[in-house]
Length: 201
Image (tube, rainbow, N blue to C red; front, top):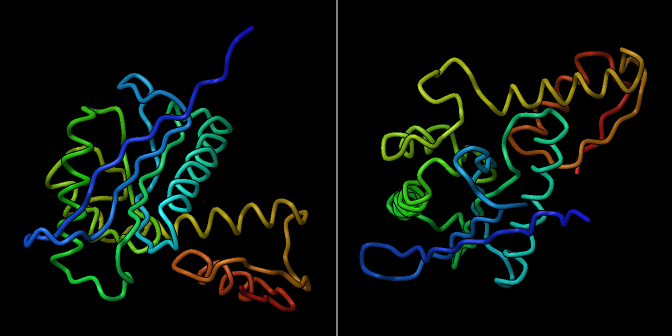
């Protein structure tokens, strides 16, 4: 009987230049991380009510990425980087964000091609440009200012919705759960395609 791969977790403390803790960076993967089947998933920055919740979200997101990678046979293992911020993200300075990205670059470099990351909640393509200058393990439309990965993702979601609804959202009432960089574009596009109503959470 074949055993399912066991999840893997790595952590790094993130602190500013004065040594003040900024949070903890958690890398969760649905299985072993190897250069011949590297992990892939975006880097999320968020303040959690407990470290246990941050760990649980990192693992759940990694498992969700595993489903995506398996479905499309990408050759990647599902993984995710989550930074559990010690203070509200709105209070982080650009220097604080830089320290996070430097810590992530160190972690990814140490993994030597066994993990690739990109944008997620509270990380931007600008952040990924900075990160890619410090390590080569970034997949996020780096170096192409005309391509927004959030918009590309949104159009993929809209296409999926159209496919489920036999090719048209016209006259339908729909709900978009999450209205950030991706969800807002999804909602706008659904309305432009003739949806009767689009509710957002």
